[in-house]
Length: 442
Ligand SMILES: C[S@@+](CC[C@H](N)C(=O)[O-])C[C@H]1O[C@@H](n2cnc3c(N)ncnc32)[C@H](O)[C@@H]1O
Image (tube, rainbow, N blue to C red; front, side, top):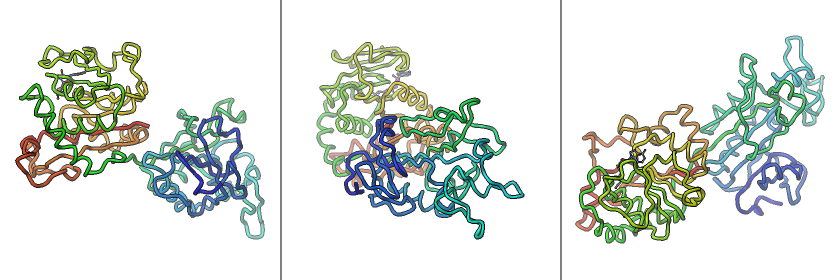
């Protein structure tokens, strides 16, 4: 096997890969081996350049490998893995934790108690030159050293799952082994199962999500403006005060048609204008529209299923046969976006659109745009789960915002710059734009 032979989703495992390893994850991991080249392995030294394009690999797992590579060589090695990972991709690292009693006890220490050789890690110790030789562990990982390595890397999120912290306290967060099986944890290694304690420092490093919608170009968006306007001219509600206007209606029209899913859940109906658009844009989809105040509707569809309980209170798969994996959820309900995303993750909904995507300091609800600007645990949680965060561009952009302030918010380039009579409505309603965004979860 060679790098050029890899097809489809690529999963790389640093080192030799026992064949049953694939069964634990059901992912087609390919080993990067120093010695083997066969159907399961590419001969490759992970300290060297990987002959793959940028953004091409879904997961790289490095289990008990980095401690065999000189610490000062690791930053470039990690940068190279970052380069080949797809946006939203994962580097799962596990290295022995030398705060673990099992490893600490078996290692040789100098008069200051500093470990200089671990015979359990293989290789030999050359006393003349005072160095580990023949492929043994050349450094002895502890939390602070791995944290230092990763904080200077390009990875946006490094989630430490198992380790002993600086006070020697054991930390064990749940590990999702379906993303990469790890042998030396209390779940799989009896030496540390009673009592359960960490043996490896396990870290999931996530590359940032994509900000583009795959396959969509600006030209494709501009091309759809005319067919949208033709339809929009026939809208049932001429004054949709309190609801969406042309810039976001166009976004919904384009994205729903592009995603082309079997089910569409709309949360936030108001007078029913967006329900009408959804039906028109995707006539074959099953639509469920939710609003606690359905009495505001002036457009009522005969084909749509209406519900007045909150989305999180409904069992739509049972009631309507909704398949979450074939569903787009469109939220225009001014609710907390983090709660919506947590619910979606729990129930397997992966394709979400958020209308009220206000920037920090604006709007009446916690939006995804605000969350991502927070750089806190909630933002990290989101980044770990995000594959795509795509802000649909405005059609026109004014210099002054709806809040009568200069436009300081990061925003994609508008689709059009010169205002013409044909597209005037997009300019008239330009300040109704609030960074409507599509989100794809992993
Ligand atoms: C901005 S309006 C929706 C506009 C509509 N999408 C349109 O453009 O024509 C917001 C709506 O969210 C509804 N809403 C409030 N809480 C909700 C919830 N928990 N679930 C669903 N809808 C909710 C309100 O009753 C209101 O009708």
